[in-house]
Amino acid sequence: MGYEVKTEASGVDWIADVLATKQIKNQLVTLAFEVQWSPQSLE
Image (cartoon, rainbow, N blue to C red; front, side):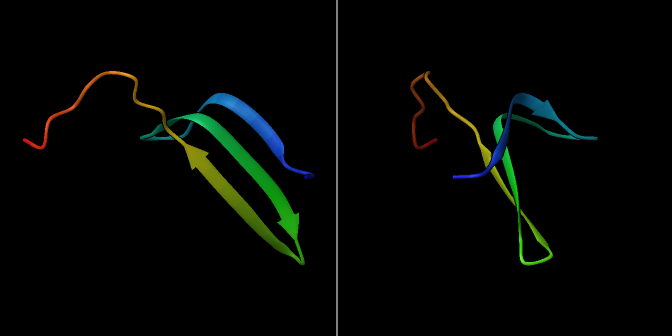
């Protein structure tokens, strides 16, 4: 689909499991995915 994809990408104060970027009509579209495999309660 034309995205540049990086795994374990990081910025100043964040880390994404997957970071996908794509230039569309002079605008950079960025999608970040974080996956949680451990159980989590509502608390």
